[in-house]
Image (cartoon, rainbow, N blue to C red):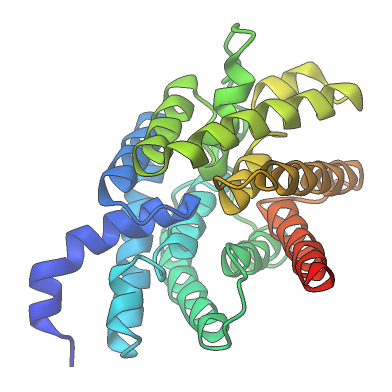
Amino acid sequence: MIDQTYLKNNLITTILKGLGQIMLQENALTGFLFLIGIFYGSVFMGIGAILSVFCGTMTAVLLKYNKTEIHQGLYGFSAALVGVALLFYFEPALIVWIAVILGSALATIIQHFFIIKNIPVYTLPFILVTWLFLYLFHQIYPVPVSPLLTADTTEGYNFAAVFKGFGQVIFQGSLFAGIAFLIGVFINSPISGLYALAASAIGALLASICAVPTETIEMGLFGYNAVLCAIVFAGDQKTDGLWVLIATALAEGIALLMSANLLIQLTFPFVAATWVTLAIKNFAIKTSV
């Protein structure tokens, strides 16, 4: 049975927190700003975001997952990314909407598995589920691609890439969305917002040094993984900046390698770089004791 009291009192807040958790922010206002940015880019992606977070949350409620974790939005963010991604890559056909529902539920179940194992996988459930549907809809049951893939989102501002690194975390290429997402992070955690802004700039710089096409950099495609890495390691300790820099450099290296091999990155460079950096950080802490 669905907990009717829970739904009445917490559902909207939980959905918004689930959106905020895409960038590790347990804040409903942050999630609302993210939603505004998504709708600005595409009504279909906005609807997909709401539907997917709702389905992910309902899956967690029906399967009686921990209520505190549900209310924190921990079962919404990977689901949300699945929904937005599928509407970004494919036309909004019926089969895609079905995939949004099923993919959101599957991402939630995978997320729960790792949560109970106490393994920090961040957006890995979203990555695995989205890769699965990309394969199915490209190789098994072809679905027409979305016009968003060919839309021109390049804006002639030298600083745009830094802000667009925020937007591309949730598949948004507009300067408006990037700024909205930055504000969303900043109001919940100013230090995370500032570190992420710096990391996005560093990511763009590293990509430029590695001769990545300027248009690709200006779209923010080499900034969003850096943004997420920075948010994970942001803090008020002197060494936090070092860990942000290491994670950002690793993420950019992985992104460049995947790009060179024509692999769809999603947020895998962020996840892999964060795992490696956490391992290095934990080793450094143990050896210094």
